[in-house]
Length: 182
Image (cartoon, rainbow, N blue to C red):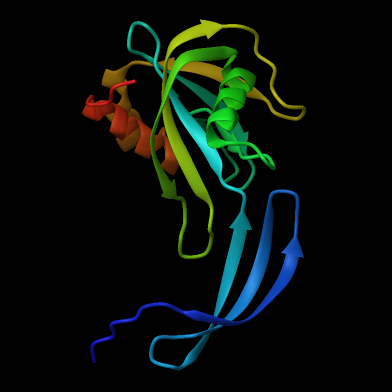
């Protein structure tokens, strides 16, 4: 059987949880073969992340405890889009809050879905150069250590399981391609 239309028509939608960071909806859908299914969808405002590159071509990262996996993770600076905030405004704010640096040259690379099987969260990936240290001002309750890594360490950190965060892996692998123009 060849199915040409892959779209799923929403029949009903019910919000079962409304939170500060996300909402959870359960949707009854009509499938391409006219049967029905159920989808649990996390709605998220999206976010932005940045690859901050120093003048000597190193990457500034952050180390922080993440409750969901119950681990300390090494990540690129990133954050959730606030209401009415553009991805560029978000990434500038998060870079300064988390690392204390401001990038004078920022370029958007691309956007990607984090987990499209159950969430509409989209992340916008940027690269930043010409960094200037201003002052670090993390959000209340945010405990972060700034880490600097060298490009030649990236693959070992990923394959040794020291970097497990998907947005960070995507960003660092893109950086290693070396064909960006900031």
